[in-house]
Amino acid sequence: MDINWQGLITAAITVFVITYFTKKSRFEVQEGQLKFGLFIRGLGIACLIFSLVPLIVLVTGNYQVEKPGEAVALVGLAVGFGIGAVYSLAEGFLVKGRFDDKGIYFSTPWTGVKEEAWADLEAVTFNGWCYWYLLRFKDGRVIRISSYLGGHGYLLELLREMGYDV
Image (cartoon, rainbow, N blue to C red; front, side):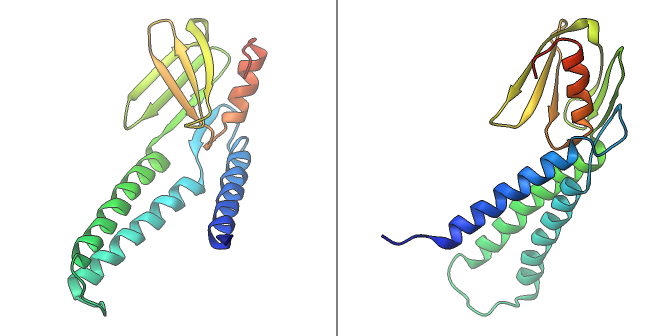
């Protein structure tokens, strides 16, 4: 039986990096603030670079083997990493929030601005698949707090003080 060492090492490094940055971001910003740190922004910049390289190779024709479908693969890489870049950069620079003992204000480019009072909070659940906390309010609004969001540790402490099991 052959062991895929490269796959195992890659998986181990991925788990380590994700765990490290999640724990680091818990209390990374000033108490009461929510925003992404360098990890998401750096991921966006890396994706941007990875999307530009295939485009440059395609435009300049600077590749050595011309196989059928090679241009499609280069365009696919550029589009895939380009989408990742737009998403990560938007998350990293445009998602922000703040909270205090009265309520929470949260703004994203995807769902807009939400401002809610803690008195209207109905439930707090954790989605292990997406690795975010779901804050559900009486008016039906939902705020998703990513585990990669800087300052979410302070928010979890406040929610525990309010009697929620997080």
